[in-house]
Amino acid sequence: MKAFLITALFVVVGLICLKLFVIWLEPRMTFFPDRQISRTPLDYGIPFDQTVISTEDGEALITWYLPHPDSKATILFFHGNAGNISSGRIDLLVAIYRQGYSLFTFDYRGFGKSSGAPTEEGIQLDSAAAVRFYWEKVHRPGEKVVYFGKSLGGFTSAHATTVSEPDGLILEATFPDKATLLSRYTLLRFLSLFSKYRLETISNLTGRTCPVLVIHGDADEVVPFEVGRELFERLPGEKYFFEVPGASHVNQYEVGGQAYWMRIETFINQIGVSR
Image (cartoon, rainbow, N blue to C red; front, side):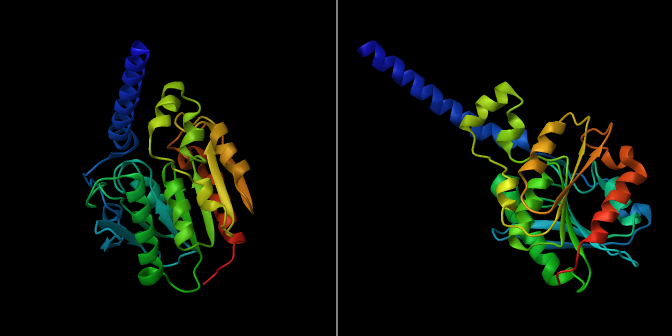
């Protein structure tokens, strides 16, 4: 009996230590922010407004607004878990603008020049603060508004719909929740049993009414194509799926070319304006 109790005690202590280790490790394995802003829209000849906004818990976030003079819609862009609004994605932001859309985007806490350090709860507060600021201070009445979440930004854009619903939602290279994504990786699936993060995109979208366009590359090496399909299948309501043959996790617009932009434009053309 004594040996059993000692063994049980070691197991419990080991599990507690493992849980504490996973809680320490999780934000470091989830977020890879870059503090350096290497380029801005001005480097592409595009004027923009930079504003600092505050979150509910007191963090300061950097936002960019690129108003297009002949805007077909405004796209609110929610970026992924690495880099910042400049590093790794400014070319996509500029491409969206050059397709005739106004663009509003922001950096989560700990990314770029935004204060703080990222956590699951924190980036939800950030997305909420960003959309509230957009609708209260930036939105031009009568213009279509589309949230566009890429990779981890699918989760934050989905959360944003619970704060203020857009006219349409685009989800690119993203997943239904963390458990579904990690189910393809044995070690990570085991460690996730001790984690706090859930990253539940689908649960944030159960009550939405706006249509959704899901975009996924069939060569995505980070979020496998079948995970993107599962996201689509589990979505309720009006939804559309667009496969980009040969596209990886980051280059859908480059590989998809004009067909990619035409699919987005068709989606935006068919949605209505709510306010």
